[in-house]
Length: 139
Image 1 (cartoon, rainbow, N blue to C red):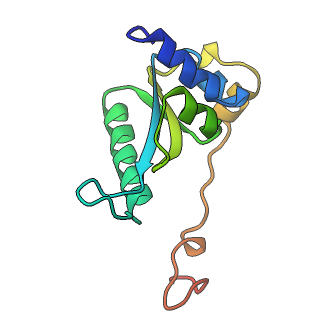
Image 2 (cartoon, rainbow, N blue to C red; image 1 turned 180 degrees about the vertical axis):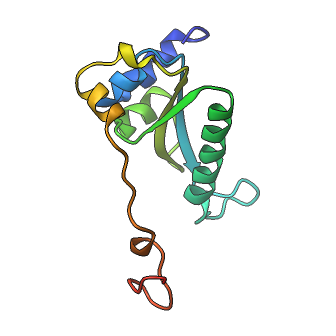
């Protein structure tokens, strides 16, 4: 935000209104893209999105280790982001990530406060990991 306010604003404007509430005070917004072609031979890279996800996870872990918060957002206008940043068609726009220090809980209100303080739940491992055939839960 401080180094290039115009680029920050362009990324921010692509976010859905709900995600703008997460990003409004973040000093960094990253537009995450997966290159659908290998650089060395320009052939299709079917692992691009997988590799991009792994790289982003490491970025998020690093941010957390530094006391920062990285919030990944899928609610954004990919066409506007592509146009704003002249992103070539071979790149799949995956997410926008806001990075910054977490806001104090006292600064949150409304739906954001409710979501942030709600009990967390996870899907059961038996719903996600299968053995032998799809849908056959791993015991």
